[in-house]
Image 1: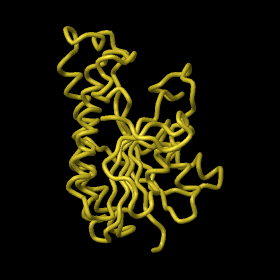
Image 2: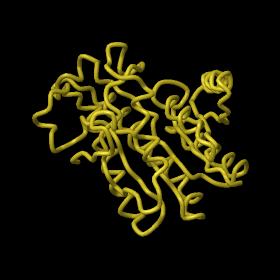
Image 3: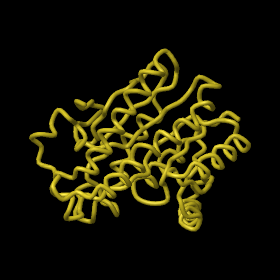
Length: 247
């Protein structure tokens, strides 16, 4: 098989769907669309098919060891490889009233957010890494946020959002650690902030579309050999090109 295989988590809607759609339009990439619920994923696959965009689908719950193991086995048996992984699946409880203060934040919410936004990313990345190492090729893109930048956290204008911010700080750390471990290989790991988009998470008042938010993910998913490693990128539309953010 000469095509690269791209796995996008949580890709039945929103940003993940936009990333899957754009990657699938490239000639040499076979996209595997994923979602927790099979009916959601199959519906997304059908929408793309109606546009003459062909993707594969398999259900995947990144918070479940059993689901990740089943998915990895299927991927290996079906394609024998994994070239691109976009860790898009995530949760954002920022708009819950208790997330406005560290005095009221719920530990259960914080734990659930960390479980999905950090530990689940570690789980699926760990599972697919042997397939990348076998061919010394991989592009891993972690969807983060400017709200996770420790450099600007104390003075930015974003909500306090402790659960979400802490989880994305953890994701950024995971990105840096994977990059450190993979130095000298052709497996590149980077994070990026897609910005405020018109998705279920971002709401209809957001200034940009999910398609615009997907642009940087596609750029990082298709980096050439010797490309960026262990960096944190801003959304490209803001600066007119690939610009890194301070951790």
